[in-house]
Length: 329
Image (cartoon, rainbow, N blue to C red):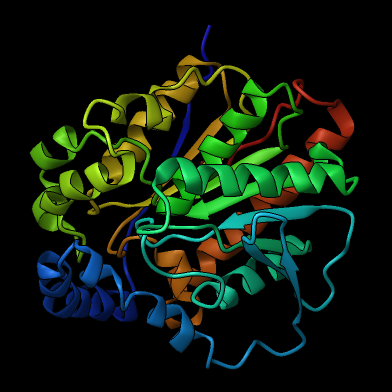
């Protein structure tokens, strides 16, 4: 008997969200539709993270650099008042080819404040340095490192946006398949979970999405998997999801990756995994990353903090594998 997913609609949109959606449609969508997915086209993308590093941190935040043995960097983020009795392990988005620790520094600070926990953000390797399996290996290594440092898996949450949502699920699956204890829960924001673009290309959101061009996905997938037939095995939606922990998925109502969010919610339900799916109207892809620019982004961070606290509280009282997390509608 499967557990039905809890689906919560978040209707309405602020004027700030409306303006952000229109601006993305006019400026970002044409740019991303024509950006060359070639070696020289990928060359300037690290500049995005460098530029983001010029932004001042939020007041009261502490950062600590971590360098893993394979050279992959990570960064501890402690918002003011955050405890050290757990951790959110965060994987940034960026289509596996852009963004990094700096672009998401303010978002993970807000997640730290909302959850009351420090966040370990991972600067995993991306294209063109490695394909998808290399990115997953870095994120799995970060999770294993936390376990080696003595963190209780019942006090570890995995989270990520877009490509990072893919990595959150892939890391949990890698841990299970390696015989390691699973984290307490997963938070996935506009996750890219199905590398097969067929359903997204046929969906009305292919034209409605504020800025993500669906017709670029097959080319990007070929770069990632380096084998046209491997995308099935590397898509978390196609994995055996048995035993995964409670999950929160957020998606924008009009984004193309809504297909992936809804498909994963259905398959988690079939695997008897508690899942809460929130569908936010009038928002752009991965809108919680936008922080104080949008009221909805602030509200989404509050929801993430609520989910993290609920999951960890239930894990503490009921034990692994028996948590009955109360999911909001």
